[in-house]
Image (cartoon, rainbow, N blue to C red; front, side, top):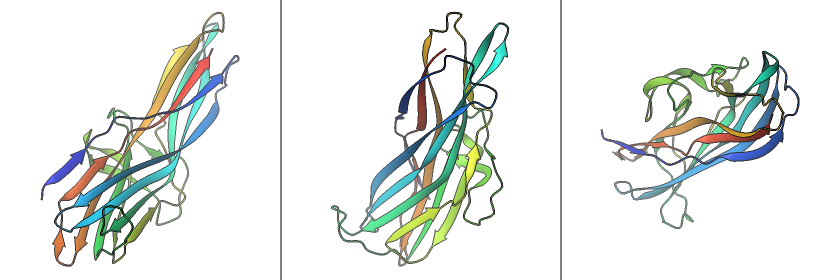
Length: 225
């Protein structure tokens, strides 16, 4: 079975934050909601698809002593309770929903630099939560991801929830030293990559496995230190 892969450039959420004093070991956490979407037409099935990924990304600013000053860090990104949705239509205007017979759907989150691995920030007691394990990715080949895989029956609208999931890349961070005058402005971005796989079935027909990497999920901070 052939594999279709698509790539998009990343977008960032931005904010301006002043840090005149040390942020402390626990730091200050910031968050942004994210939404990614893709439309796709399956020629063998004569069906149009709209796929969306939504959730929340958080990241933390903290500091550690470095001589007479402080070293600032931005990182520890968390992905919280993301949701994948798939809607199926018979027309390109996407007004007339129509059911498939079956859908296999997977969502993945990972560090596209292929350096840091995810872990759970808290215990999760629901069967709908993300799992952590080795997956095949578009950027890192076989690498550890946070993921969920599901198989669904007949429907025109599918929702893959990850209730209660809170996954962190605790070793993913960027750093910069404090300015002696406390007036240096710097911008830093921290990102996690999301992608999905989808295999639709209609009667006895199917299409190639669709594998797609969304634009990176990012949080950008501008700080004065």
